[in-house]
Length: 240
Image (cartoon, rainbow, N blue to C red; front, side):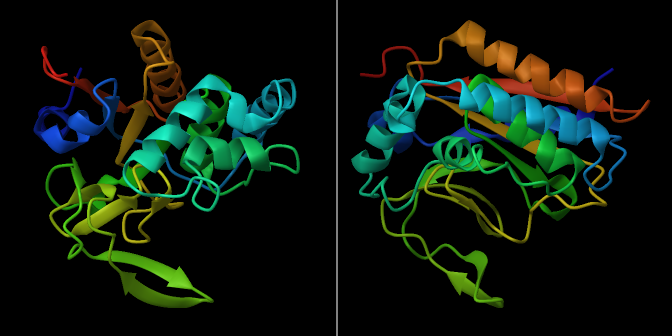
């Protein structure tokens, strides 16, 4: 059974026309979940990450030549980012896999593992700390992004034209899927979350749906009261 509030969250999500103009092949899956039993990394999430590390180790090298990684590098260049300096989240995880993927908490471990296993960039936000609807836009440069540097908290602003996920309070993820804001990061006590799967042309619709199905199956195992709503956003028909 779907929680109506969760359905409203995903139904309100939008991708700006300027983003689709940049990449008409872009699709996003929004998955809102509540009833989760939170916690730190555990044996199950560790096993999932070890599986992801094995899969990453068997992939052809170099990583930047993998079709979906290469597509995201092109997308970053299209809005002015330098992919060698600011890597998309999928490429960053694949490069870390050799030395060991990070163990953060149960929810983050799950979505990082699914991202690597399916080669799809994937992010997670704490819905209790989210404000309004998720929106993917090209920034005007005034939006607030809360981050940290050298242990100090600070507010940054995206570059004009940068592709960012945001809510009513500011940027939740810079450069499409590069770095998340501190405000909405998943924590050990998170019980409701929003997950965003980003995909470009090399990932066909069936593969994207399979990635979402895998994530939902793993999340559903995290508690008897877990409820899920999901929605896919894509460019309107006729977008050049």
